Image (cartoon, rainbow, N blue to C red):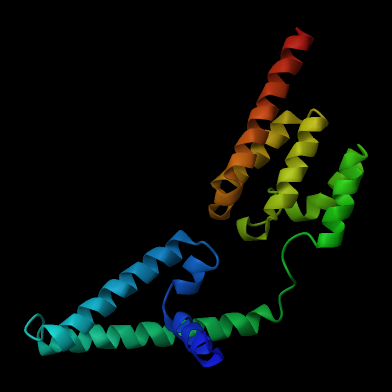
Length: 191
């Protein structure tokens, strides 16, 4: 694919409402918005070029006006978002800190690892967008290893509700099962 064609497709995707959010970020809302926009665009295209008797003049003007306004709003939104993104610190646990937390975890220095991960994974203090899923999953594992099963279950339940946790769903459910198993074992040993 030529560079010009690639840039053209990138520009078209940038004008398409919901496309980038749905495709690159995995947002269900973005996919639905892109699907609705596709339906409106196809209807306008068919009514204008293939079946002119399908829609009246005012309906076609309304559809094309909606398409133009949607594309302009999308471009404006992306421009504002990119300007605002320059002022925002990167989200998530930095790679070197996460690696350090893993080393502490493997050496069974759980509280040291927790100290590193907590600012990026504590669900009580962060919004859903700011939670680092990988850091939170490792933190839940640390909670399980240190017999804080209630905290682990609470954290895992919150993570499972996040839209972006779909790719980690198997691991999150497996960890949740291990936490519940540990909790049951602890109760049976104490009885």
